[in-house]
Length: 128
View 1 (cartoon, one colour):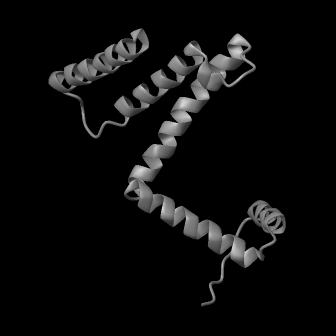
View 2: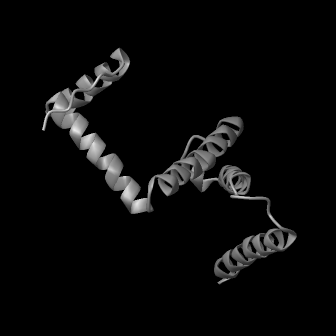
């Protein structure tokens, strides 16, 4: 099936570069990338959940990398406690900000309990 498609010049350049690198035609490269995007959505249970997963990845990565730069961490920043905690805080903050409605006090307490339980389990495992 033929699909006419207009793209910005910058995107065309990226497609050309990727196609050349992968030894595919531009059409094959676009088709492969579109197919991958739809499969990723399916894995996450739809476009909304996929978008939320991407948001969580950014919410973890950006603050963690920022903290690593601030501390001068050269190795894998995810192995540094302060950097990891910055990323974790970013994820929790974004999840709360994107909660579908206003959180009730009961929901806030349940979340707090869940987070504290997870930290306690982590400490138990570490103590062994």
